[in-house]
Length: 241
Image (cartoon, rainbow, N blue to C red):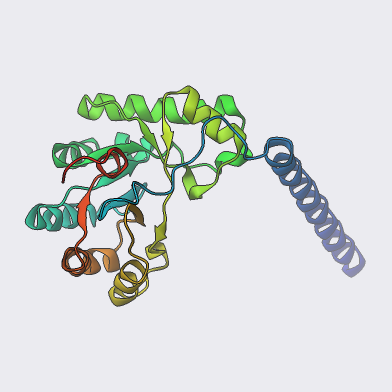
């Protein structure tokens, strides 16, 4: 009986090893397929910041979770009379269409894919499906059509850029990352932004509790530094804020 038990354990371990090896090989293949063979060279280049000649910045928020903090962010932005760009996950929009409508009443909406995959691991066709499915979800919830795309995890290559470009989107990244998904203290978020503040900056945020606490102070500090805050489109187009 003991010998049988030992043999069974060995079989299980070997099976797990084989499965992990196959999974690692598959992931390696996908990385090579969509990255090494599809380098990040495209007619559609990503945008990291707006015009450097104007003292303006754009605050952005990627929304695929954190719905409990979004209403608080909206209240702060309303009180401070600041508009920003929310990049919406399509599945989140389906689940929280009423909250999506509230965001759209005062702020710019962008596209952040439907299921939040690693976009460099999937084909151009699948990237297009992710973008289009989110576009449809946002349109059904708000009547608005998105034209800015923030790829999940900030990952991109030629496949991702061309998928977005062929769908009529500008691919938007950022020049300042709060890394607020790590849940640092509000002071850390404020410092990360203010220390790197520059003309045309695009600031990446997420709906977290520290972000909510940092947001009013951050807005005040940036405005005291002379920055006007607006949406990504306003910062890119040089519109008056």
